Length: 383
Ligand SMILES: Cc1cc2nc3c(=O)[nH]c(=O)nc-3n(C[C@H](O)[C@H](O)[C@H](O)COP(=O)(O)O)c2cc1C
Ligand SMILES: C=C(O[C@@H]1CC(C(=O)O)=C[C@@H](OP(=O)(O)O)[C@H]1O)C(=O)O
Image (cartoon, rainbow, N blue to C red; front, side, top):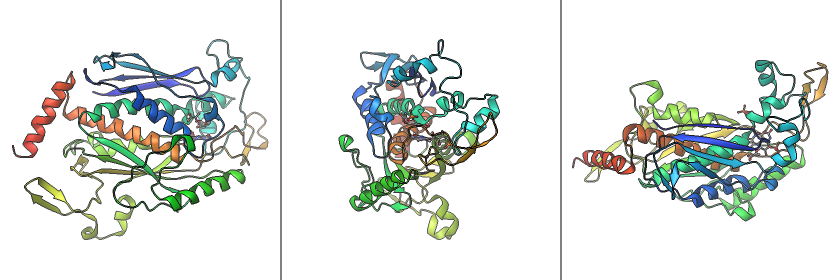
């Protein structure tokens, strides 16, 4: 069983992750993982914090000479900003009450968190709620991508829309490398890209924030991962839950998603054909999943993100101590999380595909997994 846990706070010393279940013998290219982290960090819409950080994953255990041993993989990403926060954030010497936040931001975890845990300082909540946590999830997903690469499975993502401005990428290939230095968006439509940038700039100038939609595409997943047999083994269940767990994601759809509700069955379901290469479809409205099982087509997931809750022109709130009306707490903030989230969600989807893949083709080392996979592919092809 493939699983992970992570710990860390936004302005704490670091984030750590523990991954258990990657088979032995997988070569991990740290350059690929660190490139992913750079993409997440440097895209458009981000705030001042990203100027401070220089995200890089440090592997603590589970690898020898770049090769997985089958033991738990421990990894860490440092928060450079901790240097500026350690007086408040040090687990042992942090000064109680300093750096406190008493006016919760609508849309953040501040108010429900303090009500639930009985605090009178939202910092105890926001530090863990922060989407800085996506840095470790991206690295964890990066390890899953390294595993999936052994089977030629690739996960791509792109920005579909920002603040209602929609991209219309040409052709099927929607993967466009971000030019990290110039913080380009990744939407595959130059004209829309300029408008999206302008929309982010406009929101920033107004002291506001903006959301959007990203699409994740997984290529070359064999038919048969996930299962219809129980609710929690369904691949769509797992993907929806995992994507929804990313901060700000408020909607997830697979394939034609919400639009299926407006169409006739004849316009929705992907007809089945057969050739000497096996079964195939001419359309992929199902987004590669039927009955919770991959059907051999590209897996297509779209996620909608709400606008960021910290507004430089803050919304009305209430001071939790005095109970007086007050403007919400303002911290230095991102303006738009969508381009960064397109990288995070790619990693999160990769993780879930790897989990389902290993559920079906389990093994202690990569050769065992490959044998199981190849045997199955042979059967699929009636070999
Ligand atoms: C990549 C990324 C960056 C984010 N940056 C910020 C930020 O700078 N300020 C902020 O208030 N929220 C930011 N958020 C969103 C909050 O973390 C999120 O809204 C909050 O944790 C509440 O969770 P929820 O939106 O899922 O309800 C970001 C989200 C993502 C995915
Ligand atoms: C640090 C990251 O995202 C942070 C997510 C975040 C939030 O409230 O979610 C608030 C901001 O942090 P700060 O308050 O330090 O400016 C973002 O920068 C990151 O993605 O690496």
